[in-house]
Image (cartoon, rainbow over all chains, first blue to last red; front, side, top):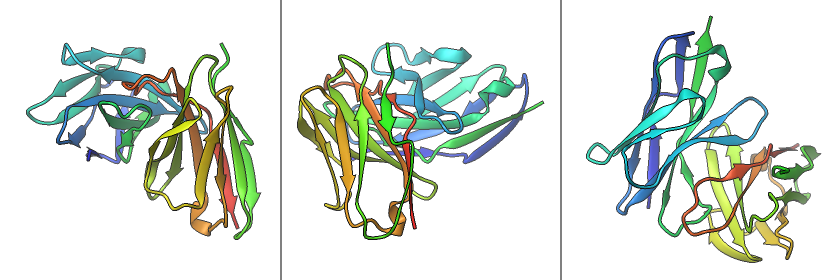
Length: 114
Length: 114
């Protein structure tokens, strides 16, 4: 079975500052890793995904994440945040052949202040 | 291309009633997954349908059921509603391969049980 832990429930940050949202996972098999974003009153949108290959993954809106197998982490980073990045961010894991079944972390609420 | 459409967006029911939620996936997508989102439990996988067959199932009681039609549209049903069923129910579609993760989410159906 897989599990995901997002280490911070809330992250306040000032506009134009860098941010890192932390995610650790647990799995006995190889996994695929994802970050999704949810804006208020909306569904989830995929930011980026790691399936294989390069461990540094670039996504939309200037976000990137690095897969670290030895530390079982998949932290999300952005060098300079904007007010519009205020949202809830979810890390998720899927094992091979699991199709549409994702295991999500509890979410991190990113609050960008002017 | 139209996105994932969920209806109704909001609904209020009383304990003991039943509810049916509908999801129209993106055209050409054959997989539909359902998730329950609550403040306490976060995002939890309910089930996934692919080509009218349930492919994956989460750990929810039998009161939660679903189905998929030949045009890939899906419905989920919750019978004998309990207060704890109040949640945002999210539907997601994907092309349907076994390696997915890039799920396209609808905006959800917010169910309130009184």
